[in-house]
Length: 421
Image 1: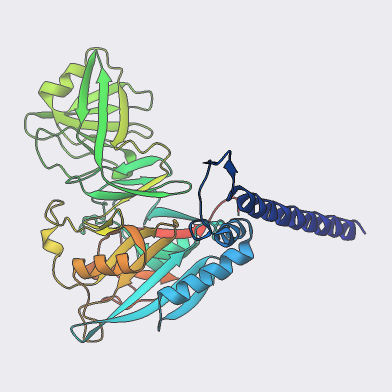
Image 2 (image 1 turned 135 degrees about the vertical axis):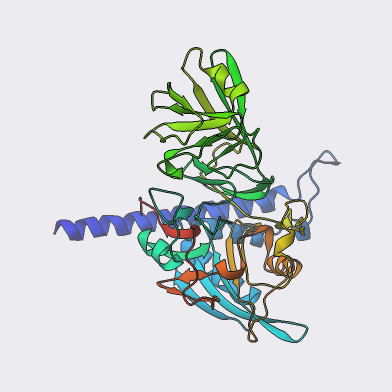
C-alpha cells in the first residue's frame, strides 16, 4: 500500500510539473507576442518583426531544455542529418556511435565518431584515465583501461614516452596535475558545463628561505640542465639523478627539506623531489621549510581535467592547424588519427580514423581538421595517432587499429558513470 501511495504521489507531482511547465511556455510566448507591437506616444519603444523574433523557436528551445524526451528526439534528428549514409548506433542515453566512410582522391577512409549530448548523458563524466593508479610508468590496452574504470566509451589520449609510458604534455585529473606541458602545446580543459582549448604553460614556483624559484616542469623528461623539475610519487620510487652542477632536494609531506643529494633520491609518500641547479636550490636550505605552488597559464578557474594534444584542428569555429608552432612536424602525412572536439551546443565529439591500409588510407591533419569542422566542431585538437589510434565502445574495440586490440597505452579519454548516478 505504501508503494502505491508513493507512486500515486509521484504521478501527481509529475502531472503538476507538466501543467506548470506548459503554463510557463504559454506565458513566455504570449508575453513575446504582446511586447512585439508596443509603441508609446508615436515613438517606437521597440521594433521587432516576426521574422526576427520567432516565438516557435523560443518554445522549441524551452522544451528542449526542460524535456529530456524532446531533447533526445532532437538529438536523434541532429545526428541522422549530420551523418547521412552512416551507420548510427545508440550507445546509451545521449550517446551515439557513428561509423562513416569518406573518400579522398577516390580512396576510402573509415571513421568512427562518438557524439555526446552532455545534458542528456548527465549520468556520465568525461575524464582522462591513466593505465595505472599508482605510477605514470605504465602501459595497458584501451580495453583494460576502460574496464578498470567502468567506461562505456574510451579513446586513446595524449602523447607518451613509448619506453616508459609517461605522458608527454599536460595531464590533470580531478584537479591534480600529474604532468606538465611541453612545447607550449594545446590542451583541452574539461569544466562542469563546458570545454575550452588553449596552449598551456606551467605557472609554478617553490618558495622558501625568503626566495621564490620558478619550477619549469612536473614529472617530465629533462630538456635543459638549467631547468628546475618536480617529481611526485606518481613518477615512481626514485627521482632521476641531478644534472651536472645540480642537486636534488627531498621534501616530505610536511613540506620540509629532509635531504639534499646529486644522486637519485627516493620520492617520499605525500612529498616530492625537486631537482635543478645547485646555485638556485641551495638558496632554499637556510630554513628548510618550503611551499610549492602549481598553476597553469591560462589559469582556467574551475577546470576539473586537462588533456593535452596538438596541434589545433579547429579554433573558434575555423580550421586552424599550427603543426610547426607546436613542434609536431614529425606527425604530418596521411596516418591513422585521433581527435577530440566540441560543438557550439557543447556536444562532445570523439573521432578515430583508420589508416595505413588499402581499405582505409588515413587522413592528413588538414583533412582531419576539415572533417571536424564539417561535423560542427567549434573547437578541436589532434591527439596521439598512428599506432596509438584506438576507440572502445560498449565492451569492444570498434575501429581497426594496426595492432589487434590496439597497442598498450599510457592513458585514455573515457566516458564513465558518475559516482552520483
